[in-house]
Length: 108
Image (cartoon, rainbow, N blue to C red; front, side, top):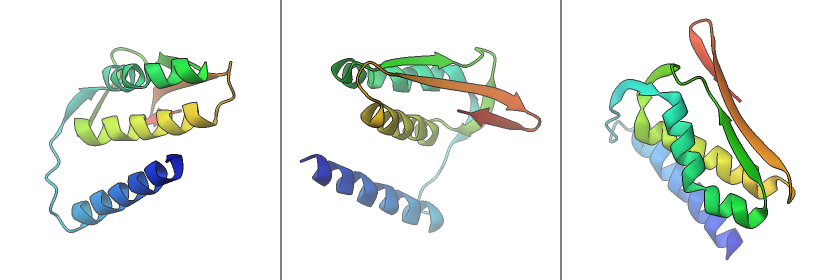
């Protein structure tokens, strides 16, 4: 079942990429509060993290804003958290952080 879920996620991602490259997906670019997106994704994965006994923390300055598509960026955080929680040993921790790095925002 886990392998089927993984393959399904990969296929869904590939379809999303193909649609984006073909111009079929309209992205809504707007200023976004990055901390809110990360916290929302962490909340969505809190039950999974609890089951795996993994502590997730978000350390992103509340005033850090980026321009982007909220749905796409949420998916990025969700995918990263899913993998991080899945591959962190029980009792471990996952930390999401970000900072302004010149003209870019660096997320770790």
